[in-house]
Length: 289
Image (cartoon, rainbow, N blue to C red; front, side, top):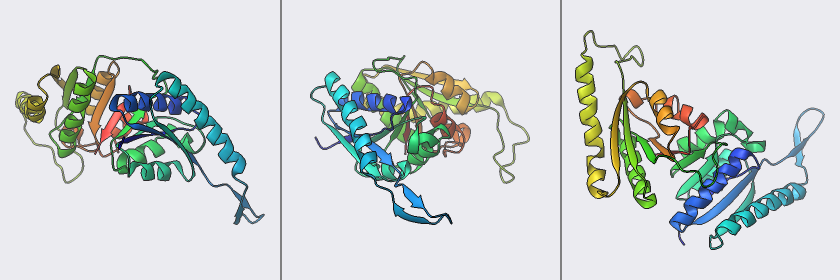
């Protein structure tokens, strides 16, 4: 086995959901599963607030290792042949996961966590990892349960390079899992993104819809030819990308988006649409860069 899937864990419900999703994916891919628990290095401060020597860390490490060992045991009960590694590292969660991402095929995190992962509630860890990781990142909501099935895979597109990479990822996942794939494009009236992006004085909504429809067909044409057996559906939906993808993802088994986009998806810079999906994923959500 030369591939690995990394799961960030901290004992929270979202962290455990992420591990179970990662384990199922690792089993499907015949990959190694690497459980990662990040611990901040504790320091004892002087009365003036100046950090001095680090406090003893052996007990913290032992506790984290016990949690990971117990979780690994439960995972192996379900998938006895799955290779599971467990690592405890004294570092910030973002730093630890980004380091793990350099040798991983996929990083999986919960959308909300505790401890050093507590900032996942604000999206800081998951958003930073999704923005900077060198591999795709899947963010799993706390309500996800092992064995839960959905109506297939949904991918959001806009014709940008990142969305084309998201389409490729989504087609591969759909083919490997024998799932249907819905390719979704959101379109709406022109909006200004700033003072240097003025709105057209006159525009035709019918023309905008036709152009979006043509771009949708063009976006999936290449992958459709490479994966002819994937059940495929295309949807052109009027609305904002965030609203359209959130609604589409509520019944999906996986939602896939690019890390940044154009047009209706121009916010996919983890500043609006994809950041919103990272913070509040309607289902396991893959960010592809």
